[in-house]
Image 1 (tube, rainbow, N blue to C red):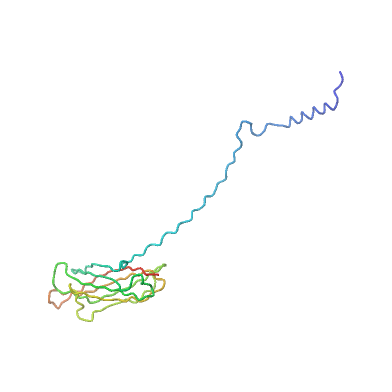
Image 2 (cartoon, one colour):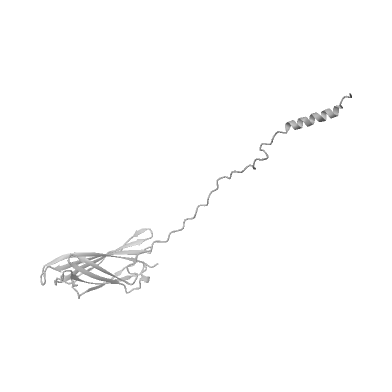
Length: 205
C-alpha cells in the first residue's frame, strides 16, 4: 500500500480544524428574531389653555338699578341711573350717578321720615387689586331735621364720581343713608335710623 501524499493529509487537517471552530449559532433556527425593547418615550406636555377673565359684575349694565332697604320700621325704595352712557364710564371721566328715594312705614304708620345725610364711599379696583380711592362724597341736609322722603315725597340727587387711577377696571360704591324718623305724628322727637347699599360698576377701557 502506497503512503498518502502529505498534501492530502494537510488538507484534511485544515478541514477538520475549520469544522471544529464552527459552533452552534447563539439562537436556534426555530427561534423568533430577537426583539428590540423600545426606550421610554416622553409625551408632549399639553399647553394650558388660558382661562377667560372673570366677568365683572355691573349693577348699571342695563342703565339703571333698584334697591329696597329696611331701616328699623322704614322701608326705602331707591332708583339708581346715570345720564352718561355706561360705555363711557372710563377711569378718567367724571361719572354722574343719579339716585332717587322715598320711604314708608311697613306697618302703615303715618309719621314723617327725613333723610339727614348720604355718604358715598368709592373703592377702586384694578387687575392687581385695590387702587387709591378718592375722598368720600357726602350730602348733608341743609334743612332741619332733613329732607322729607315720606312717600310720595322723594329725595333726588346727582353724585359726580371723579377721575380715577388709569388702571381701574371697576368700582364698588358703598352708600350709607342716615334717617330721622318722628316718634309719633307731629312729634318734635326724632329717632335715628340708618341703611346701607352697595353698587358694583364696571369701567370701560
